[in-house]
Amino acid sequence: MTSHRKDTGCFAEPQHDGAAVVIAIDGPAASGKSTVGAAVADRLGYLYFDTGAMYRAATWLAQARGVAIDDETAVTALAQAAEIDVLPAGEAADGRQYTVLVNGQDVTWAIREPAVANNVSQVSAYAGVRVAMVAQQRRLASRGRMVMVGRDIGTVVLPDAPLKIYLDASPEERARRRWQEEQARGGQRDYEAVLAEVRRRDAIDSTRAVAPLRPAADAVIVDSTALTIGQVVTRIVALAQGV
Image (cartoon, rainbow, N blue to C red; front, side):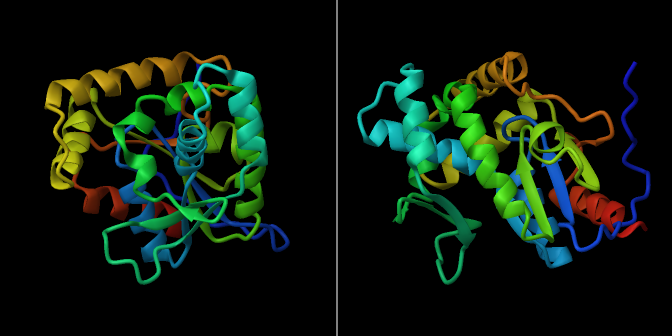
């Protein structure tokens, strides 16, 4: 039986002849990975990168080009040819954590629309899309000193990452967080609709044939259901610093 690390353990960052030092944070939809990852990166002086943005960008691109989401071949071809980049927010004052560019176009907020959210799990399940995105993610990680957030960072993208976190929370709590975010931006969906989406995405992500959502064998599992963002960030920073 697999035995995961408890979040009270310690971690000292190793030095591997100049190799990248990366913190991998995985977890289901709306578990707080993005907020926590950005805060941890800020505290440690690392670069923050949410890999989910790449799959959302690929989904947005397919929709923008009028390509059917269930056309795996066409969607994969778009993903392979796309130039997707994630940059610091810079001087943007609209609350973004980073800027996402697709072929030079700023799609930071467009990829957060419900139409994208409702289809990204299907796109991210395509083997060809994942291969294309993983190659780009590893390229970015090679820069070092990065907090990389996603669903298969510790298991597939960066299996040798020195610290792996699996951030979880109950479906109800994750739906509440997502619903509140949407409401703050003027969203019209009710809580039950968001909860249904969270549960549907959980089912797709955990049962897909390629890189299913699961904790890495050596991941530290942190359940944030009853924790504040600050408490979660403090735990992860302590693990990273070996406190």
